[in-house]
Image 1 (tube, rainbow, N blue to C red):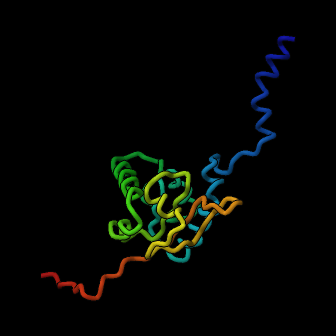
Image 2 (image 1 turned 90 degrees about the vertical axis):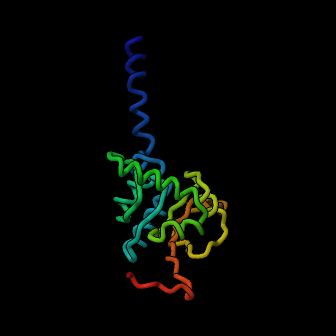
Image 3 (image 1 turned 180 degrees about the horizontal axis):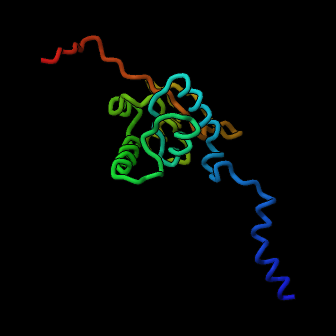
Length: 166
């Protein structure tokens, strides 16, 4: 009797594997944001550009969406550590500051899984100059869960004249 109890106890955890589906990508983040990742893939195919997102999205976006990203969780060198710090600092900015600080960023992915001032601003439902929603996921009640934005580059005002290099 004790042997049967030990046998059932040892294998009961593995039996649950057959009754519960495994998350795609073995991550709840991947399942949660699959529609955003797909939107990023479509946008980057149409118009390639640098994508800013929390580093936890990095691997999925890099390999599924084929978008260049600033950072991910695959950190091997000091350069990659520097990019993680840069990503963190950029996510602390407002949408207006982001466009000025990094004019090369063409896409921004934000979700409620990632807490930052930029995320809060972009998920608030407000509109920001130069930011266009190109992908979105919502709860059934309509609350926004995540968004992918296309960021238009800043255009120099007409009164600024570039001086030739001397």
